[in-house]
Length: 97
Image (cartoon, rainbow, N blue to C red):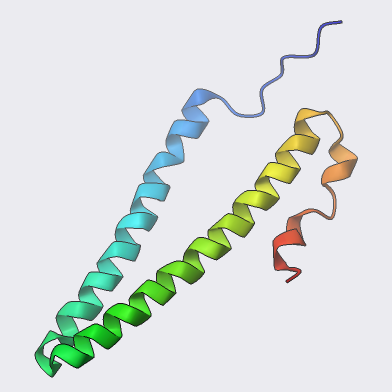
C-alpha cells in the first residue's frame, strides 16, 4: 500500500511565506517602539502605561495567532488524510469563542 505522494506546496512556495511573516513581525515590533518613542516625553508613568498596553496587545495577537494555527493544523490533518470533505466548515473554528 503506497500512499500518493502529491505535495500541496513545494519548498519554494513555503520559502515565499517567510518574507511576509518577517515583515509582519517587524511591523509589530516597530509599532511598540513607535508608541514608546512618541510618549517618552510625557513622563515615566505614561511610558509605563503604554508599555503595559503594548504587552496586552502582543498577548491578544499571540492568542489570535494560536487560534489560527490550531485551525490550520486541523485542516491540514484532514487534507493529509485525504478527507477533503472534512475540511469544509473548519475555517471559522477559531472564531467560535
